[in-house]
Image (cartoon, rainbow, N blue to C red; front, side):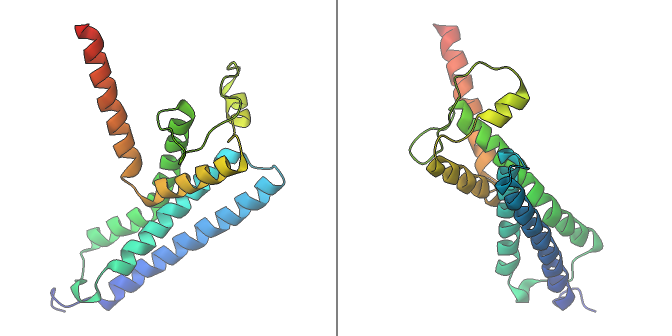
Length: 180
C-alpha cells in the first residue's frame, strides 16, 4: 500500500477507542451520580468525572474534525500515541478540573461566572474535613463548578494558562515588593 493513500481503518480504530473511552466515562458518570444521590461518593469525585467527560468530548470532537482525505496510513508509533492520548486525556481533564476547583476555592479566580463557597473561613482541622465541608455556597454555584470542571477537561489549555498567569502575577508582585 502506498504511504500517501488514506488508511480507512485508522479512523475506524480511533473511533473505536473514542467509543470505548466514552462508554467508560459515561458509566463512571452514571455511577458517580447515583452514588452522589445516596451520599456514597464525595462531591469532589463528581467534579473529577465532569472533567473526564470534558476530555472525552474534546477527543471525540477532534476525531470528528479530522478530514478523511488527509488521513494517511500512520506509523505504529503514531497510532499508539494517539491511542494513549485518547485514554490519558480524560484523566488529565479530571486533574485539571480539580486544580481549577482549588483555584476557585483559593479565590485566585473570582467573579459572577465562578462558584462561591461556604465554610471557607472555618479553621482548618484536616484535609478530610476540608474536602468534605468546603462545598459550593448555592445550587447555582454547584452548577457553575460542574460546568467549569467540564470546561477544564474540554479545554486542555485553560488550566495551564491560568497557572501561568498566576505565576507571572506572583513574580511581578514579588519583584515589586523587593524594590519597595
